[in-house]
Figure (cartoon, rainbow, N blue to C red):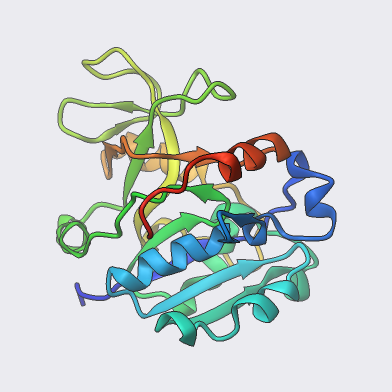
Length: 240
């Protein structure tokens, strides 16, 4: 099926750099311009035609169902993948995706609940192209932020990701925590395994199975109270 892909919003992290705010509130539920960070993504997913979303949780996870409910207010059905309850803590990104696979299809959207990207659109045409591409993932990359000057991946002339070098532009770029993925990428991990995503992406790039593209819209990895305060002091963008 190529229409109305499902999505996973990654929301299990502790948010250490955002303390003390995250001592009592999960980072994706912190408000930006009047609504929780995660709601910006839920609204954008719903606007793009997505109808089912998995939210993976661990830290203060009981707050997510209380805040978001079943998703019906956005025209969504939300499934909660509770890593804290089931495994005693967060499973990291790849482990979290692997646990959620029973709720996801062959291909699905992935977005971190603690980034702010109000102009990003979960485009159905791009999703269809990805489904037919046979690739393991399509990643969006952004210019390197000050806290990550070395970046993550290069971009080859063929639009494929480079794990260990730079492409024709001589640059490495930062993974935006926005992607389309195929279940095969994480399906080899038994549910409950703690595993980061980076090694799987690098292996996929070495096998020439990971596409990448640059996203130049507004993007923030909201990591500290000062960043959150600055976002809330900005003039608000157009409604998501």
